[in-house]
Amino acid sequence: MQEALQPNRPLAAAGPSGTEPQKVLRSRVEAHSLVSLWDNMEDVVSSTTEKFVPHVWRWDDIREVLMAAGDIVSLEEADRRALILANPGVFPKYFTTNNLYVAYQLVRPGETAAVHRHTPSASRFVLEGNGGYTVVEGEKCPMQRGDLILTPQGTWHDHGNDGEAPAIWVDVLDLPIVDHQGAIHFDFVYGEADHGGGEPIRKYSQSIRTEIGYSTSLYGTGGMQPAYVDSKRGDGIGSPQFVYPWEATYAALNRLRDHEGSPFDGIVLRYTDPTTGGPISPTMDFTVQLLRAGEATKSHRHTSSTSYTCIQGSGETIVDGQVMSWGENDTFVLPSWCWHSHQNHSATEDAILYAVSDLPISVKLGLYREQAEGEPDGAWRGRPGTYERRQ
Ligand code: GTQ
Image (tube, rainbow, N blue to C red):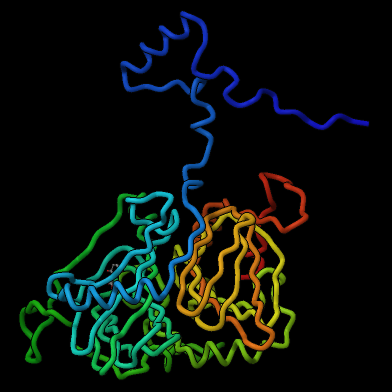
């Protein structure tokens, strides 16, 4: 029988001790802002993203503090009244996963948040209220519970609330990767020419330029696209459909509920850019998944991190052996390359999760790997993902 392969050399075998000449050499090296690879192999090849931990943020806690902030912090002072879900593993850095920034935002009745645009891609998933809205590139997008509203990179956007109740939603942005790339730019100066034309005048909010429902009437019918408009909206990359209404999402989940679905995610649907069929943002993948009463998924892991918000029901996600229980409007995060499986313990009720991951980054860079429970490690710890083939 053949012996199992052994590593050529255990990592960091040399370690930071060594002979006298090696120690003298180390001080010479360090005096010039240099570091030797041979003394620090283990640090150099280990992953700093392992510091991100799985965590659950509770809706009751967030809502209470957010409502208190509503009384104390005005939108004129705050620009955006949002509470960031700061991963405890990297605190005080305010990232939620290595590539995702997640926050809960409140706009009170009658308030407006000033128009701006930026290089990060942004999204809002609506939890509460029925008079909230976001204006994206002149399109007013009303915000009802379960709606997904996109403000792709480079699109002007402002928020408001015409209703009687607070509007609260979950923001997910790709801020951390844009930051790593040294590419964060925000533009706060917006101008429009007045009705008669002439020079642009600075404005706090955008004028409405389309009818309500423009996005979904143009792009919201699967398999059909308007051939008479320029589908580039804003100056970046992203879906021209800015609104994905809950009604359509929920109907699609229900239509498919008798399918077997994914062994790892149940009935999982991807939000797509109608012009490409791919994810709706260059860096983030958006999905919604139905875990039927009593459903328990198989465990797997992959090289992408995910933020999940529970939209309906309750359940548990087991991450590397740690049980994370969640209920309506809670958000929990799954760091990259952690084993995870989901369970809906209810005998009668559905559970629905809204999930945003950084999968497109891994796929574009050729770094996507996945591994199912019971599968051997294979090449590069895992196997190349099936994601591209499913596209
Ligand atoms: O609503 O435009 O949570 O620009 C972070 C940055 C929300 C927004 C955030 C933003 C916004």
